[in-house]
Length: 563
Image (cartoon, rainbow, N blue to C red; front, side, top):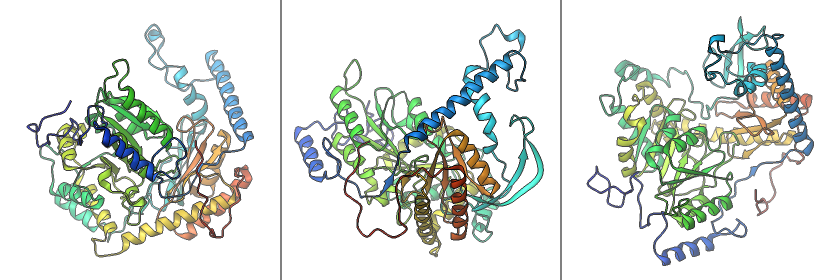
């Protein structure tokens, strides 16, 4: 339902979520035949590499790797999960007959007639699989999480059901897991002087929402700075990155709207889509054929049963996907968005500050106009070393969200020192602090990323993602090797993040490395040296491709494989 111009400051052609309609009919598709023909012809003229059946323009060629493991690896992975599952059922039997103690919470005997509070089967994975290996997660850090950190040693006497601290500290563990892409998670007193000044001026907390008495001058300064940095009209900031997605998406779409979501989107996007009440359809990861097929079907068929046109069609993607390290095919998606008159929601949590010649994210990486993205979202928790998130775009969109977003209306305003930290980091990136430190960090991150990825490929590891992505997933596959890898790397004073099912597909467990501009070449070489040794010891080098350390003498071939 469209709102009139009398409501707030929204324009007559503004839909209820603040997005411009721009000569579209109710399903978001152009209502003039010549408009359809013109858009189709224009897209057909630009199509070069997307294969038959699609008419979207080719994007700038940026190499990405998704090598498949040998068949025996998949077989051994399924076999490994099968064995631990069988042992899990056997141990549940031993607990049921009283031969093994059950450490999990259970209902009291007098509550047995009630609906179960603790679902036994639902906790099967936690009881029998995760609990045996959970020493690899939630490790207590007792220092700044910079390029190196200190770790409190803990041990378990009951197979990880409980832990006790030994009093010993592991010093100078190389941090390969934090999202500290540009190294702004730092404690240099000279760099943090302005942050300390803001604590003295405003205090640590606001204790109110932005709409009441929590709107500080530095909040407005930050929002103007974010808009200038992104090259858009306006922006709004929030105190929590997760809530920026989960609480704003329901304000943009609702019942009668359609969301087309990439299958690898973050949980915050998925939660926001579910809370909105809109219909959700999932397309294959970065697959333009799959997306265009769904767009065609949505435009031609409309809503289920009634076949009424969709009120809005919203495409939701991420800039860099945090588990795959892949980069969105932004020019292709923008072309499809324009062709079918849909809206585009871009989550740049991992890409803003981390890619692009001046850190402005994937819009700069692909040299596209930021105005072509209807809703630009990002977080300050990665590249900026702070907390919170932002929504940016047209002024009408931001004005709408100020009054309708639950994060804006009900959440406490961003902490002043956190706000100043973001301002400090962003001004450094933009060069407004009078130095070139920001550009140096961006270039250092790009150099570290390409060096680390290239060396891992040479060693024979299977890694996923884009060559420009600082998120570097190394595929481990088998559950036993995932655990052994994490423990062995910690023994060598290297902190890594390992991820398995259900956060990843069951056959694609991995270690996720996050490269930082704060990492020195010596640190990376040390990590690579130990990776090489551990990879040989645990037989983790599954790649069948041969990589050379020499630079390419010619361009990559000009074809793409359909997924």
